[in-house]
Length: 241
Picture (cartoon, rainbow, N blue to C red):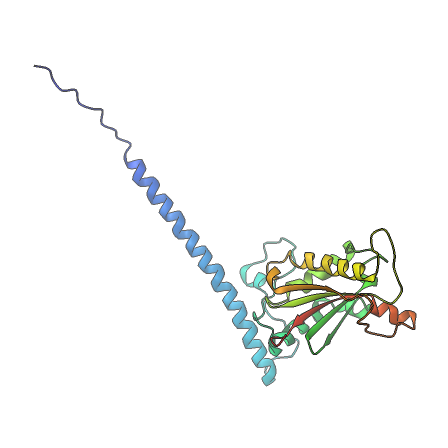
């Protein structure tokens, strides 16, 4: 009578269970990490709201620094501009916070006349003058202007904004640009594309417009006025727009 051959017993079956356990453990820590990052953003947004309320009550100094998300998480020495989180809607309070941060972070450029900030019926307007950001008749952003543009983008809220290109009334006709319409639109698009490199700027909330010489900020009868008209405006739109 033949004896049945016993199959070989594997002693490595525990590895399957162990691998499953490690996979589940990894997934668990990924969830913890993601939750932690979400909680950190909420903390920064809460800090911004509290500071805005206290500013109105006169408890904090109007220009006191808002702790950045980078500062709370830990800078890591990357050299990137700090990310300052503000409320996700363009309320009057959030616009005040954005204006304060831009005035602080771009103080040298504002003093040099590269940047101007004012309030309009549409919202907060950040004017980038041609002299600081573009060469004459060109649409590529100057490399020297990119750091300040990054600082501005870092404090913009996740809210609707419009990038507007403007020129003076001097006609342009080159192989690249048939008129000031094309020049103003291309410059606005260049600024918009760079802003979209920042995670807090959403493409679905952005619009780009070229107005040529038809929305002047000053008279075109003087060289100084024409220089003011050659600009790109970043308009932080209010909720009513």
